[in-house]
Length: 164
Image (cartoon, rainbow, N blue to C red; front, side):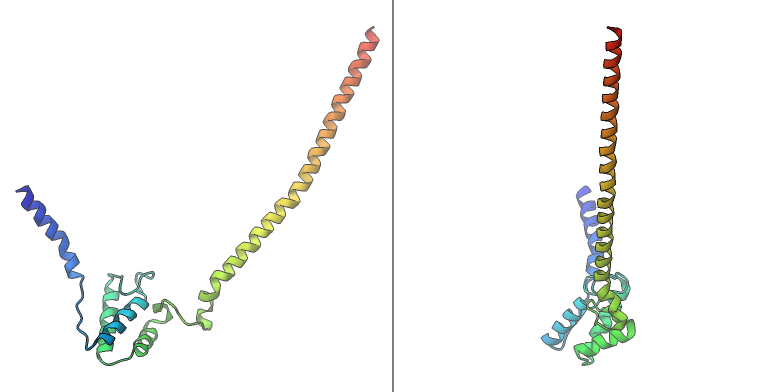
């Protein structure tokens, strides 16, 4: 009985896996290759860091279906991409074009790196300028202590000479 229950539970857990498989029939191999390339290149707008092929979000399923339908209507790869960009913006592309509206996306990481380097250099410069006075103060303190010790020794010798 335990074996039957375990087997039933195993097949119950596999049911969602079978439901997630999408089956599309294509006119030719070139259209199928275009479809696979497009769903790899287009970004899921819900998941944001996944492409349409790897996302299980409902919107990703809809976008995959829309891509399939556009290709079946005879649209070219470029026309499908233009349709998606027109409808969802450049964010749907993993490699958005370089233009004024996406300049922050392309230049942002380099600008951030530049700012971090400047901050680090300023911190290093600040710590170097602080260390010099500290060293000078340390030397002055050693001199004062050595002077104080030598004065005590001299006073001690004077007192010993007076008692003899």
